[in-house]
Image (cartoon, rainbow, N blue to C red; front, side, top):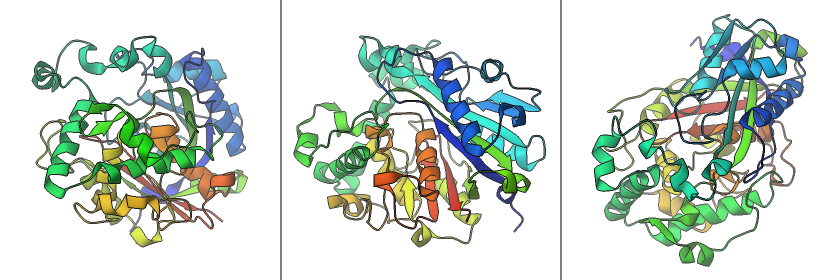
Length: 394
């Protein structure tokens, strides 16, 4: 099968500092991450001929969007761009990355910079998560008109309802779900840039306050001030790159209704179509995956991805993660080795892709997965779903 993925590589991966209320602008963070990615690739600003932002400057709560692509281009003093833009919809929060891959594979550009910058933690101010809730941004429109009247104002409520149904159908125990939070925090303790690095126990998890039953505080990801960036390059440029990572397959298919509240089953989200699409584009299978970063905007989403991707059967994710023996570094499927978004900080899937690049290069330090050759990243929940399978380029 001829695949567009064979025409592209991730040549550079960069990040800014991660923090809570860092006191820096989104543009400042984005420029840091982009410069880091360009340098990491062994390129200069003059080599970049494309820039893509996710999501770009669109109406949104404070700190959510990040700067527009052309503002970042100006700050970096880039030259002529043959590809630029922003993606607010698409297969997942990695839609901008997917679009960069398509542009490079089509020959529109040779080195496309992709970034995600956020200051959501600062945007909250003293108002907590309610200050950055999308419920009232731009008015009550679309699916929110059916959810807002019943008090379902944020993704915590929508995911809480799905998780509660899953508990009812499969008997998932809070003690099982809690192992994800414990696991991710243990991995964050090995990650210098993670937001929360102090280990937690299962007892700590069970004692934390409830947010939207059955999801408690430690089931929710951590808003932060941070930026992550990548350079997607033409495969023909590999000889001049520092340490590129190969893109084996991308899953970006969508099936079903594009609404958070209209799924036929609690795990019947866009993840399923994306997973099917991913595996259809590669001869590799679940047993070949050495390390995985699966989306954890809420812990339940990770369970849904484990099942959608076929690492376990329907209703089996709780048993799969219980005790964390399978998902710790050194286990059968090392999961969210940088702390994920539950402890590392929420950059909407981009930090997960960054972690896999670091792992495949053997540059993860204390959290390095031995002999990592194949890495899987997923992003999105509800009507959003996308996945990327990467392999080391030796």
